[in-house]
Image (cartoon, rainbow, N blue to C red):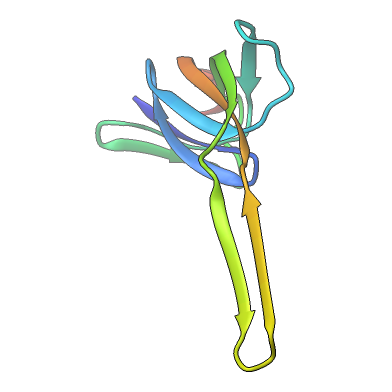
Length: 108
């Protein structure tokens, strides 16, 4: 069974037991979080698509760690104008482990 969830403006395809890095979530390490924006739920040939979300579906996850991605270097230059700009960026992330996919059978 898998699901497509939306968090931090991005969409992720997740399965139970999978570890993913998502945009930073304000939660303590070791705590349980519930992601209720489930866009799609699938199992084998059966697929349930939400409009825009699947009613009664939720994903439970555990927060494993917080961190920062590798640095991305940004360089801007205008030729012949004596303009150069160097900049760097490190995006914060939260690493989570998917514990359970809950689908309400009544809303089928």
